[in-house]
Length: 103
Image (cartoon, rainbow, N blue to C red; front, side, top):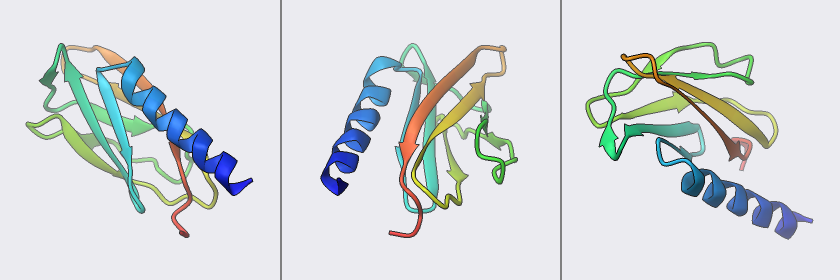
């Protein structure tokens, strides 16, 4: 069962980074690095939020490289929905699978 969960998690991560090039999410032990780009160029000052994790209520701004770290405290593995809004109003959504922080 653990092998199946790992395989599904890897497929979700690969699928999420391949299908939509405008928002990339990389899972870490304590959160995720989110990168926002438009037509290959990084987007600075995009507002990034998490939609389906109640304990993560903050808004995070991307830096000049289009990156921001979003801290997450999860009790179980789950799919997390990220939302990014650029300064010109373009909105991006991305689901990414995250494992719990108790590894």
